[in-house]
Length: 302
Image (cartoon, rainbow, N blue to C red):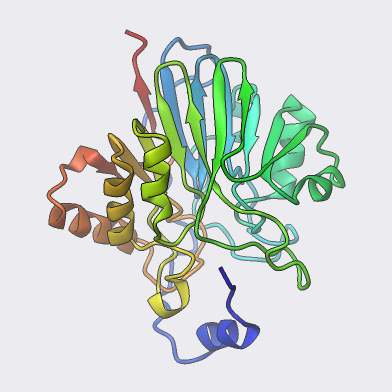
């Protein structure tokens, strides 16, 4: 897609706006957290924050778009500041085998966090085309690029890179020079879909055609107002519900909310709008869940 011009961005940020204030520090998570470092025979997924999930399947530990930094920006102090701590401390992570990066925006490709993972675990970093050389400059040693519909495997888990409706830019002169997308993670018994950032489009039905049995989908529900500015690149909760239906996912979980203020809606609005959209579609509460930070879910091995 074609990203917004600088003039359009300035019009949104500094023009007449209904941008709602967020709290400077939101309430901490109170959910009970398992010992994620202890090996498990179950398939488990844990919501960390923003678009960061820990997926533990078939003995493989996978992180999506990890960010533990205080700011989502080019430096440790520049960019939107987090209002809620990650639900899982970095020190409590199990050894990470693979990191899936959906695109190169700062809130999804956080170099400081990636370097911590490289130092500690030396994982495989999987990215869209054009990102490998950039990441290698920061000391990441095992980077694999994929085009849409290409795949790679880690032990018995297969990871597919799939389309999304978004865009990429890291600086002023690299717009859309690297590829963005989502991932389908196929284990022996369960299949996960991680959308990354995306606007609504026919790609959800196309992904269902390729992967007709998605057990769990991770879909964004935040950063969607105002629609005239955000619609092309970020679904709103009603569109996320439609994506859930297009994918025929058995369960979906919201993400991309309540961490960094990237748009105009109040901090609690995504969950409220998702509840309204879910009810309008006749879906039960468990069909599309808003997880708490640090909350884990699992498929028992049995």
